[in-house]
Length: 131
Image (cartoon, rainbow, N blue to C red; front, side):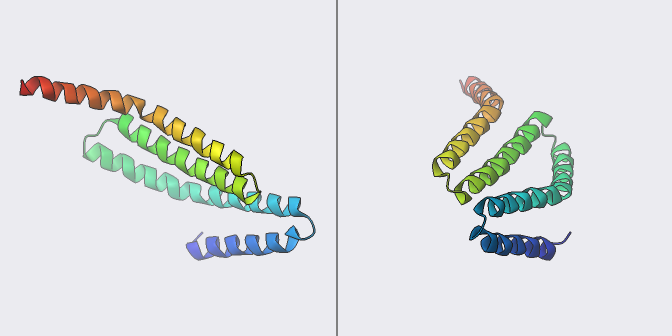
């Protein structure tokens, strides 16, 4: 599916939800959430292609697999967190959206912890060599 189709589907969903919101706001919200899930499912083949290319580039650059896995996981957490927070805000749940974002940031920090330890060990090796 090309980008024009994705954009048309998104605009159509928003217009339909705006019309429904006057009479049944619950169904309008459900329509928007359903369209977001459908668009995310359309994104999956593209994401798989990007991940495959990233794996090829990291293999060519001799980068450890753990670093790439952490990066992909962090990007996935970012997308899911932002999507969920936007849905919460769209439905008037500002505090829930803020908490979702906080949980996402914490999850990214936890994902990056092994990278921090590797970085600190590398810095300590450089400091030992310099002395």
